[in-house]
Amino acid sequence: EPEVTQTPSHQVTQMGQEVILRCVPISNHLYFYWYRQILGQKVEFLVSFYNNEISEKSEIFDDQFSVERPDGSNFTLKIRSTKLEDSAMYFCASGRLQETQYFGPGTRLLVL
Amino acid sequence: QQQVKQSPQSLIVQKGGISIINCAYENTAFDYFPWYQQFPGKGPALLIAIRPDVSEKKEGRFTISFNKSAKQFSLHIMDSQPGDSATYFCAASRTTSGTYKYIFGTGTRLKVLA
Image 1 (cartoon, rainbow over the protein chains, first blue to last red):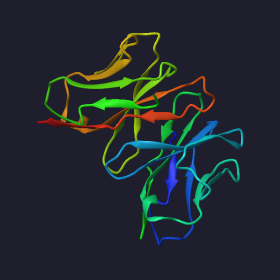
Image 2 (cartoon, rainbow over the protein chains, first blue to last red):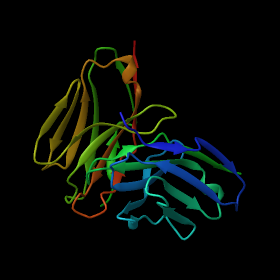
Image 3 (cartoon, each protein chain N blue to C red):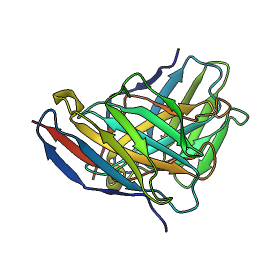
Image 4 (tube, rainbow over the protein chains, first blue to last red):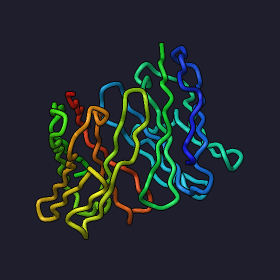
């Protein structure tokens, strides 16, 4: 059964550094998302992406964040200058239909 | 108005018992309500989902009950098993909004005792 994959599984970085989180969505999916989950808290929406552009972004997704689908298969989330409060689990999700989203295993980001 | 409230925060059930998790929403524009199961260190996995035009949906031991007038929906896990021990999240989405983002509840940590 196809699944969403994410790399790396863990990332440790220094505050102020740039990080790129990578995702490979399920191949025939059209809708792509990033969510994050701070330890012990609920999953929060960051951004949705469709037809090679951002559909919606949350207030969390400020100018430090960007997304890209560089080659038709990968979907990346870049944090330009990480802050301590960016430490969280970041989940990529994809969907073929508008409503159903399949989540990847996540990347645990720790900003020191 | 964008919130989804979930209860209880944690739940302990004996093996074979029924686990019930409740969610409530305010935005009547929500029209898709999935439940996700999350094991420690893993991503949320879609369990079952419902639209407001039906009052109940059953898949195996998992049932969603939906009360549109009360703006509430619940997950029932029949014959709960230790392998069901996980965190469960309800979510809501407006599929007509063009973005389909999920608003998640705060999660319920379920422990099923052997």
